[in-house]
Image 1 (cartoon, rainbow, N blue to C red):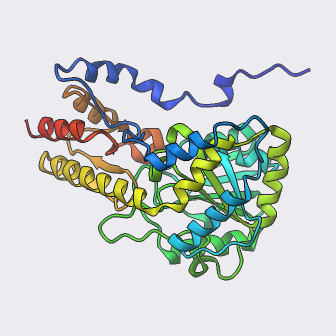
Image 2: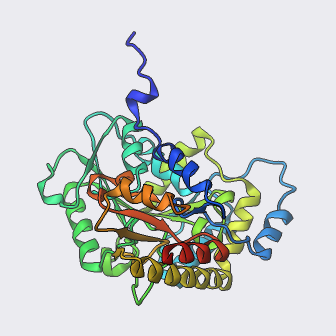
Image 3: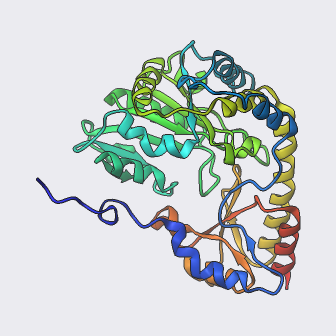
Length: 369
């Protein structure tokens, strides 16, 4: 029997653990820390969503892995209403948050040794981790032409992107889909920030007909209600696209017991049926974004991309990534170093604008001092 490999040999160190000393420094500020390092929602969950959760609390039986028919209809209705995506029946599946789906997708699809998973060079770390969990090889690449045709089984795209906020245009997405289809590879599109375009940016789904034509074959889109509806604590997300792939995921998830709790399914339906609360939340983020962007730029920082999502991709001419984290920590502010997302981020930091209005105002004041 082979020797068991410890997790430290199989997976990288959890990135945010490395921020602990900087958090300690920032927390020592007399007026407290302004934590802009993680994009976690801080605003209340809308009353109608909480009511839907509470009304479904008497749920003694096992929920449906596939989700209730009502929830599936709401997912399909939202995608068509908001993003021009029309799905066939059976092409949606609720998940226990989107990070879970990202981390386990290569495994659920049966990938393993000898298979390659491509992800963006600047990327959410879980794309890499998910490939490693499956035993596949993660390859960061923004240029697909240099990769071999046989071993690439899964290609991740992320638009709007985390950490940069970059939006990929229809032409770019269409080329990715064509490249993957020529090779029989699956394209998984992380679209958690699809509703959060700024300054005229209009993010488009990989499932939109302008991108993929009249077929969703070998395409999956991952969506989350964490940002749109402040449901990070509910772990509410879903995947949609190729009905054959969705059915394959469903079959494996039934065996594994990967099921969204029934009360959360009810809250998801309420959230997807209600565009008003999402629009109100977006306006809160718009105001915070505008204040932080202006304050950083006036303090000598450069903001690149950042046309969508919940982050500013910032750099300062006097600092590398960790140097910038340290400089801001001395002023009581915590941000994420760009190197968390790949070596290409070594001159940048990611600044979340999900803090409360009071903490954002505090950050603006500290940047001007």
